[in-house]
Amino acid sequence: MGAVNGGTLKDRRNYFKMKYKTAVGLVLLSLIVSNEALRILVCYPMTSKSHSILGHGVVNRLLEAGHEVTHITSFPRGIAHPNLREVNVSRIAEAFLEDKKSTEEFALKNMVGKGNFAESVMFLYYVYLIHKNFLEFPSVVELFSDPNEKFDAVILEWFFTELNSGIPALFDCPLIWVCSTEPDWHAFRIMDGITNPAYSLDLFTHYTLPLSFWQRAEGLYKLVKKNLQLLVFYQFEKWTYNSYYPAVAAKRGVTMPPYEEAVYNGSLMFLNAHPSIGGAMKLPQNTVNIAGYHIDKTKPLPQDLQKLMDEAKDGVIYFSMGSILESSGMSENMKRSLLNMFSKYKQTVIWKFETDLTGIPDNVHLVKWAPQTSILAHPNLRLFITHGGQLSTSEAIHYGVPVVGLPVMADQVLNMKSTAAKGFGIHVTISEDMYEDLDTAVRKVLDDKTYAKKAKELSALFHDREMPPGKAVPYWVEYIVRNRGAPHLRSPALHVPLYQKLYLDLAVVLTIIIVLITKAVKYILGCRSKEQKKEKSS
Ligand SMILES: *[C@@H]1O[C@H](CO)[C@@H](O)[C@H](O)[C@H]1NC(C)=O
Image 1 (tube, rainbow, N blue to C red):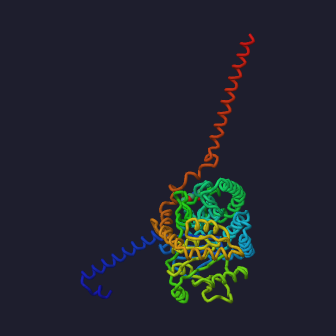
Image 2 (image 1 turned 45 degrees about the vertical axis):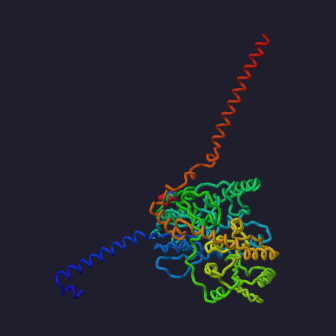
Image 3 (image 1 turned 30 degrees about the vertical axis):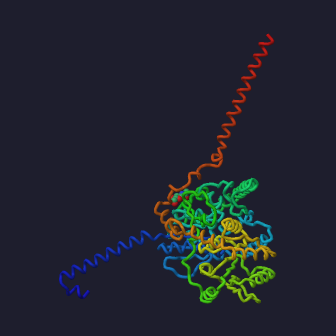
């Protein structure tokens, strides 16, 4: 500054030029930043760990792209980030402690081959209650009611209910769904229409394509049955929608669209799927496969695990039953038999086990928490024994690791059937006397190199895309905001009622015509035969 005051005219001019340039630069920069940074609301009502990992995946990718995110979650990360605000709704789960117990119970029931909670009305009711509690959670109501809160897009986890579909209307911005599983007709229902059960599978089915005659018949029967259930729930949800949203909307000075419009107003649906791990499904234009998007850049292993895996000259087997079904909940007999089985392998076994256990063989290493992706990334890893959840299967394929699956519930069976059909793993039915089967499967995957080879091939397919899935998340969110909800991508099928899709109206018209023609023909023939009779008798 002093230099300017005392300097020559030229100095002074240069100084002002510089100042001007910096100012213009700053203005431009702020324009660019404010143009690019979107304000996005991300809602993950489901209270389980695996769903929340997928929610954090969405948030991480948006933060990396420079956007501002408000994340409503049951598992806040608690690490401050200048562009992130977290709303903690973990207390929703407390109301469900009783249900958590029953979650484990039904899992165990499934272990002996009975009970299918996920296909029952109770499942729909459970999902409905979680979403209702989510909406009514005090800090959520406060956020939604505040007229100063503004968002450019709302991202909602889709999980078997559309109760949340009113949230984007509160903020007058586009709705983007994220389907956490392989999508099936339930999800496609709100984006396009119910898929044909002859060649598209229900998420909870135990069949694989192609279907036999009876499997197709059963598929159709279940589809009709479940749709009748949904019809009942739809009324519940509509009632809840109408009793919840208008009050909140009034505080913001907006009016709510009718429920039947809000449900079908999704601009886009992200699918946690990819044909390399699941099926090649027929997709509406406004759906995007993003399986693998939640996987961060591989972090280094903790030192002890790094050393253990580096030194395992015969390779490593990693065993984890995921975050809902903890291994520590297994029966004593199951634990002992597994340890006994593992002790016979020359490989090192890393077992994610949540409590302490005595009498552990030398080659078995228990960890209470497992850095799963870093373990899967290690070159010495030979096999992953998993419960077959969507997260674990996609992570296995991301890193090209063959699996042995012990599916317990929900979509895990379908995932493992698909894995086996694709040839990168073996499906074993979980039970108290599964050890022979499990041992055979483990040895087969370790000895027969085709499994590892197939896993590497599928991993290459998984990564060979027009855009990495992590980049697709911000890309499509920005696309939808830029194009005001991108109505041009929506399926025209949403406006065609079922009777028109099935051509029932045409069938009625044709039936009437045929009946009329038959009647006319009969009438004419009748007249003629009368005339002939008259002629004969005269
Ligand atoms: C549907 O979404 C579009 C795009 O976000 C929005 O402009 C419109 O108001 C929404 N319609 C209803 C009925 O909510």
